[in-house]
Image (cartoon, rainbow, N blue to C red; front, side, top):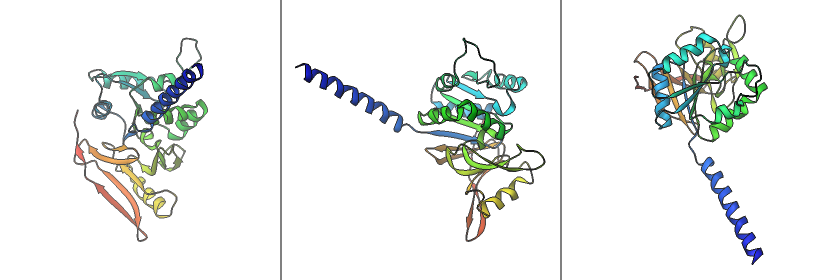
Amino acid sequence: MKLMVTTLILSLFVSTATFGQEAVKNVDKTIFVYGGDFNKVFINYVIGLTKKPNPKILFIPTGAADNANYINNWYSNCAELPLIPYVLRTFINSSPTQKTFEEQILECDAIIVGGGNTLNMLAIWKAQGIDTVLRKAYERGIILAGGSAGSLCWFMGGSTDSRPKELTFVEGLSFLNYSHSPHYHKEAARRPLYHNAILTGKLKSGYACDDKAGLLFINGVVTKSVSQNIDNNNYFVSVIAGKIKEELLSAEIIKE
């Protein structure tokens, strides 16, 4: 009898553990990227993606070195929106009252990564183990989003102004199996550099976004193209028959 009870308990434990694993495995993994920096329209779009009233949304300003004005701008943009805003600061001094980076990240419904120096941001994340926690958040279905450095980081790689003198390339976290170019229309050098890198095989085919345009990825696949106006667009750039093909992606206009 004792053996039967023990076996039943073990069976229930395994079933519960398996159910939990399936729940995580089957959850949609969502990333929303846009070419430029955040504003109320994009923040409101992320709020909608959570499908929750007053979601907890975490802003990560590592790329801007936790700049105080940048953080204030975040809170200012959130003031009249239906969310609970938080900030993950990485330029800190230890204190017993602090939550860990993992606790702060995994307690939120969505994460928005700000712009700035992509190369430095990724180096800090790796040193602090934040890159690993972000992967865990992604797998659990926490919404990931961002523009500029905050969009480039999710891809395999792309062009960046993180180094002196000229645009170069940087490797991302590879949550999305494509290359990426933010600020596509803004800087004249970005488009030809991105085209040449894909044509020569330095970068994989990928997605480019103008500053006020964005793309929604569900489980690694684009499901929607959006823009704040008719002048900002999204593109898919690839090589067909040895030549660059730039495909304009039809966008839904979104407003606050």
